[in-house]
Length: 398
Image 1 (cartoon, rainbow, N blue to C red):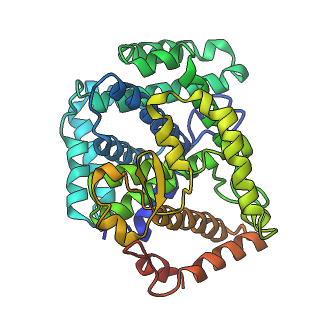
Image 2: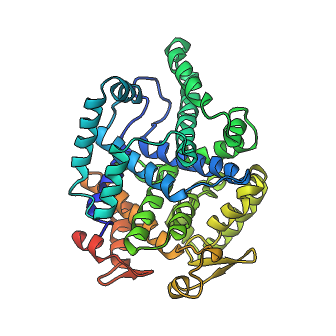
């Protein structure tokens, strides 16, 4: 099965890979957060392309971003400019480097089809004219620009001159895209992404020290990646893979305007979760909706409402359904099915990994111990969510 303890913990390493570590940084910039922002940007830029009548292959986009993260985890902090020089001036060494990366995952990626796709990503020349890949590359470049903007004020200008010129040249290649134009000129999507970036400044489990600390933004991609692996293991159709991925990516979006409220506080009273959800919906309507273009506004609202329920969309109305209904009478793409229960399981697995990793590093607290134990107890032997068996993951921790 594609989903395993080994690949989950390998992905988690991206929370420990520091970025821009040769510059002054007012806060930690890590690879997982960069990937998360890149995927939010890919969604926005891609939706503008679809608005103009073009087609985006969302599965190719999700796959390639996932494979690139695996590659970056293997290469750790080798700077992109260095990799670029090796690729252009030493192609044979670059090919050998990619073989070295592939070997790192040969025993971790146990699904042969997925391993073949990873190999194709590493070894086959990319089609630079492919629109889907251009969207992903544009998001990659613009997310780097946003990182640099966030640390600009604390760095002496001379340190950034060469980097600025390089990034300006990189993003110029994509200025034919409407979404990129609007981002660069600081129009509506720019202000939406800066709201999403607030999730990057919010630390999860903020009542207790942890190693590594994780942000709500990075957590959002981690959950999306876990759901993607689960859904692929189940053999779900492409449209469900895409729906589940982006629903998971956006599931904590309201926290950009409400901030992260830890579970013990949410459960302090019987009705507080409902009250908090109502407040979240109101604030999202007031502060985030005006920043969303009509081409993706309904999708985002669908992603964040009843985020942990299996659901479909019929005539613009969201309806909760069972897993069996998702796989049978509502299996067609026009119902826009989402496995919300699977997203909930991935969200709790992510929390479990966060707690377990910190405990293994020797950072223990009542909150971490209790959180880990409660999740382990909740998913007992034989636990299955939307047809996905969780035993093979949790059994190693019992």
